[in-house]
Length: 188
Image 1: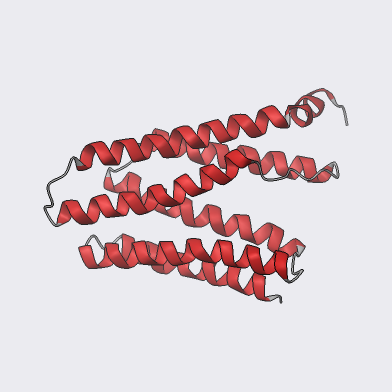
Image 2: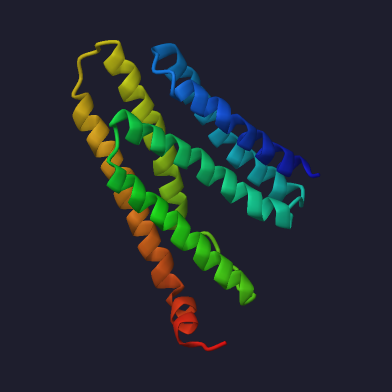
């Protein structure tokens, strides 16, 4: 197993600990959860760098790396729904985009086509990571009774994550509409 894949598996192994900490509902555990999320998010950049720089790109890594990212972010989003920090509709939109684009990538691969990561996808990922950290900070500072417009910050963050994700999904679909159109008209 390559070093890059080991780093990805470490990220996946961190997810249950992240979830456990985030569900405890204390300031200390929110700080621990946020720290785990940040470290896990950083490993995404690390494994990608290692894979590209040391020629360790594998089919296993192509499958597991995006899966690890989606599991980590989805876990955080569902926790924020449970806490009332995000609307379930917003999270549904974000998850729907992930399922749609993953399915589109699968169909493209079946046709021998690689869907390169778009700029909008990279922005989406960055906004989601920053958004999750901001939502944890809102919860932490709110629990410490620090006076700020936390509800507004929370709402703006959740909307930013949702709208950027929606745009990214639109961008991918627009760029790859030929795959969808061809699949809708082809017969088996």
